[in-house]
Length: 331
Image (cartoon, rainbow, N blue to C red; front, side, top):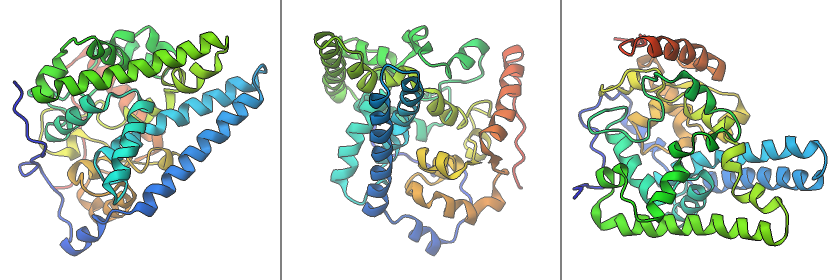
């Protein structure tokens, strides 16, 4: 039986120094910020969903569905921020959008609630295992690059969150369930998984009845054809960095993004800051960065800056798993 307390103890981790009065201001949650993000996000999703429908039967539909799918998968930071209870001041709206974001992200909410606590308490650790690190020191370079290719998750299906959800729905107790989720919540995880699988099957049935691809293209397949941007964002967080160390400056990466990408990622590009101070709402992470940046490694300049570091590192680690990227941390 897993004995877990839903509280992450970060006392033994390194923290940058920050003025206490300024820090208290950064902790303030905002329903306005939460609803502003949701309005723009879902408004953009509806817009490109409509354009895909309006151009259905033409080549333009491929473009608009690709954009729609990539926006859909940027529900990842919605799942994440509401899971931290920092997207809204209101607990109701955090919980409401957590369920929606979890479905859109292909995450069963019970499993990912508990695994995310493990992720913050033991970021990039082998023992106990951080289940949320998709790429450690990879020896399979092809798998790494395949993660960005639309529909390629069908080839890697046994490594997807959807496959794990199906196993849980069938009552299979996977390693993540046994190691991370308290036994008292196992049935809740199973029931939630069955709900997600039931929704997928219902949408597929509707597509079959009406002889149309549109329902599955809108509500099931985005997790397969629209994963490129989500993976480009997410794999910058820890890939290629040092594992098993209680200093996020060595195991986590911060970067600067353009305003559109920063919105879609909900400021999670300030990822060292988030791991050091996970109770700070994402809309305040840029301010936190300014307060502590002199104690941090230099932020990477965009996705290009991040991947110009990541790709050479994983190629070296594929040949020599002991290779570690050297991070310039102020002393």
